[in-house]
Structure formats: structure tokens, C-alpha cells
View 1 (tube, rainbow, N blue to C red):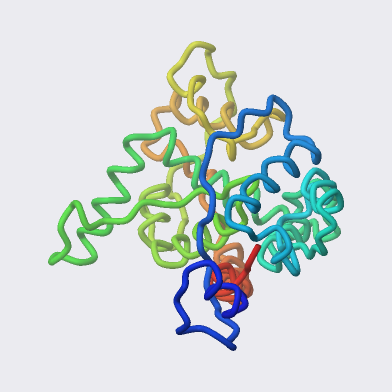
View 2: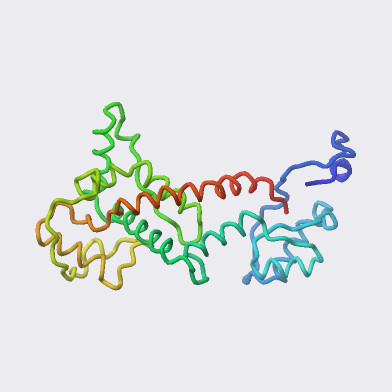
Length: 273
């Protein structure tokens, strides 16, 4: 929010005189030459940018994330500060889901997020599963073109909106995902379970870049997939498919995430530095 009188002094345009103006101008976009992002370094850079436009005394409240270097810079510049609401909300959601730095007190929700991430990651490691997902969508809608089909979304460890995107795609593509992974729109694989087997190193899947595919305990991951391959199963990643209850919880979780998504995506344009 800018003072219209200040805008008039800077631009000579009296249109906003005597008014408060809701706007978000970009006043500086430059290379940051400092080798360390310390509070002092940020303060020097911000001061130079603000002085260039005679705005050093115009900042009433700095709304940034809660990083310690931002706080230090604002203290050096003697600017009041408030952590931006979307950033605080995002951190709260990640913490509640067990994806932040704090320990989650909701183990059930954390488990759902982990299982959903493994299901999405299954499509990153299987060309066949992706093809089956596309074919299932085309069979459901004959008017759909191949380039119009959707893919799953993966959660992101630091950007909570990825959780909403993952849940949203799970809801939209639920039957098609289940068909692609199990051959059945209810997610019930008719093939007999295979015994887990150690997966040979050096396979293509070993080189997959999957942040959401942590199966280091070997209890529900690569060993089961390799056992399914050795047994000649058609649906080698059926163990990745969410259960019917998980899908129900996925839809509830998406509805809970939808409100903060609306708040963050709308209010982010209102946050002012």
C-alpha cells in the first residue's frame, strides 16, 4: 500500500494525491554479488535499491518470510516486519502433514502423504504405467485426444501447494490410476502376490530421481516390485495403489487444503514489501 502523495512526488502524476494506492511495483531486479546472504548483506542491497527511488523512509511494514537473515536486515534498516501470511500458512500445513522440520503429531496424515507420494512416484519409474494411465482416460472418454490426457502430480518437500495438486489429481484420475496400477477401477489386483526379491543394482530405476520414493526400509518398495517382475506379473506396481479408504481420505484432505490454497493464491498478490 503506497501513499498517493509520495507517488505524486516521485512521478509528478497527481492522480493518486491524497489516496492510499494498492499496488506492487518492482523497483529493483539486479544481480546479488554478495557471497553470503547475511542480514547485513541483504540490508545493504535493500538500502541501495530503496535509496535509488527515495523510498528508504517509505516502508511501513516489511512482509517477508521468517528467515533469520530477513529479520536481521529489517532490524538493521529499522523497519517493522511481519511474516507474510501465505508463507506462515504454508509452513503450518507442512508441519501438520509431517513434511516440515517439526515432528508431526498426526501420524495418520503423514502416512497418507507418504503413500500418496509413493503412488505418484510409481508413474515416474514406469513407462508402462504411464501408458496404461493414458489409455484408461481415452477409454473413459472417446472424445479425448492423447495430448489432452492428464498425468499424476507429485508432492514437493518445500512447496505445500504440491500436496493439493497431488490430491486433486488423485481425485480426478482415481479410477484411471487404479486401472493403470492394478487393472481394476476399484484398485483390486487379481494377480497373486509375489515374494519380495532384491532388485539388481544398476537398473534404470536405480537412477530415477524420485524425492517421494524412499523405500530404504525395503518393506514396501523396490524388493516387491522386483519380485513382481520376476514372477511375470503384469502389474508390477500394484502395491503402490492407494486403498479405497486412502482415496476417501485423499478427497477429504483435498477439500481441507482447498481453503488455504484460495487464501494463499489470492492474498499473495496483496502482500506488500
